[in-house]
Each structure stands twice: as C-alpha cells, then as structure tokens.
Image (cartoon, rainbow, N blue to C red; front, side):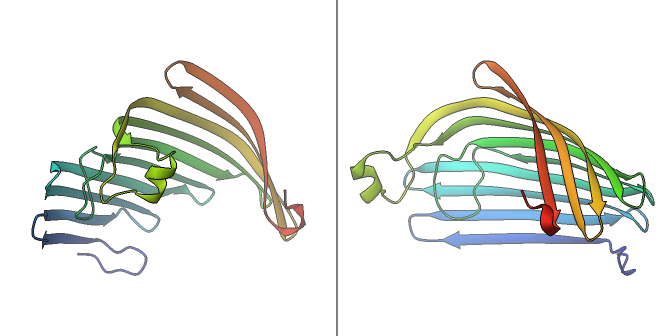
Length: 204
C-alpha cells in the first residue's frame, strides 16, 4: 500500500491463541489506515475474542473507526466511533465487563494568527453487567481470581462544548462552555464554563 511520507496507507492482521489448561483464549483482528490525501486519513480496527474458562464462555467484538482531516489550512476536524461488546476480552480472564459505545466529533478553526474557535460533541452509552464494586474488608483482602458480577448498566452521557482559545505571546488561554446531559435513570443536564491554560503563566 502507499508509503508516501505522512500519507501512508497500510493493513495488518493479528491472531492469538492461548491454551492454559482449563482456559482457552482466542483473539483475532485487523487494522487498516487509508490516506485520503496530504492532510486526511481514515483508521479502522476490528477484533473478536472467544474465551472459555471454568466459569463460562464469553465472546464479543470491538470496533474503532476514526477520521482525521484538514478541511482547509485554517480548519481541522476529527470524528470517531468506538464500540466494545460486553463479552469482549483482550486476555484469558473471565470478568463481567460492560459493553460501551462512544462516538464523537470535533472541529477547530483558526480565525486569526492568535485566535482559534472550537466545538466538540461526544456521546457514551454503557450497557450490560459491570463488575461488582468491592466495598467490604473481606472482598478487598480476598478478591479472588475472577471479578464478581455487579449491577446491570443502562446509561448514557452526552457532552457538547464550544469555546475559544486566545494566544498571548508564548501563552494561551481557553474558555469553553460545556453542557453534560446524563440519563441514569432520569435525565439531568448541567452546564458550566471551563477555563484552561495549555501553557504559560495562565495556569488555572
């Protein structure tokens, strides 16, 4: 595939199999990066696991797709989608890991040599069974080999932010308005200003 510097395109595959006596674990997947020109690239990953232990059998998949692009010399953008099934594992252990889906997009525009405006959207959804929280002395000192099942998850979080970054010489100061909406189990929304000094004397 393409090997032009900073415009590489490639594809790769992974396969792993472990036999640990009473535990059998198998993982396979693939990765691909596609250059979409001098300033854009698309990256995708996929993996699937199968895990057989004395405690049961689990299987699941995970996905990731990400696009990075420069729409113009002054405007950059990014979008992504990530998903993990509740049964996916990346090692030979059996646990109650919940499923999760995340998606988002962001854009930044340089409106002058010292001023940038930016916006971001993200949404996260959690589902299925999470590991139990160890809160007793006995559980903390005797965690066991495998995680115990906890509660069933069904919640999501949506974040939107928009703001401005201003440079002052070698320093920069950002101010964003952030809105967070959570469904767990009822909807609640909060909004606030978030100042940030990436560098220099404006540390906050």
